[in-house]
Image (tube, rainbow, N blue to C red):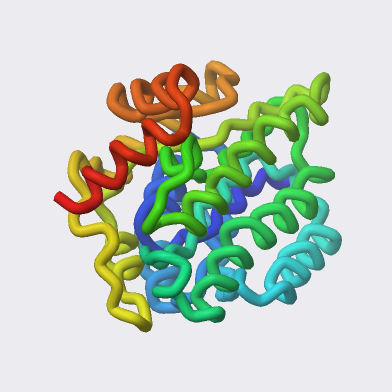
Length: 257
């Protein structure tokens, strides 16, 4: 049976790094790379030493998951790795975001992730891996980044509960919760229709390759959450020890620096 890795957001950033790591680690016979940009997927296809099937799809459209599900039903592969790395973000308060921007975040970050996970799980064998890319923004409410943080809190809670539902199947599932990552994602997130500037800087950014290494290490240990950095682990611990108003107050200061 053919082993495949399904990786969303594979045209750039962490998705691209996950594809590189999957190929290097020999986790699949073929990588199904899902993203909107055909030219970037073609570059990835030429770069990797394993076959790459480019799936040019916009996960903001529910029909995209239908296309992946139809492919799974037709080929019946063993999905040895599923990485939901596709993400959509717009920084801003509630009145900074258009309805399209708000809906886009909810569609890609939540609905598409849930739909694709449900479509792929029947094909994930014992020993398979599932990595759901969330964020350290999931640990607490974040004014000025409110909706994005809420979608990532959804991913974190969904993943942790789903692990229990899959108990006994031998599937390792991890929510990946890094801090700022040095990709084009941050620049895109700042480009809102209103031109809002609720997050001025992204300090302590780390390269996507470091996040991917930490994610695979945590998943190998079957940990529910990969914090990826000591600072994000401290943040995670702090949100368990202190009430939300403390973390929100600290964030209100930090985001204005």
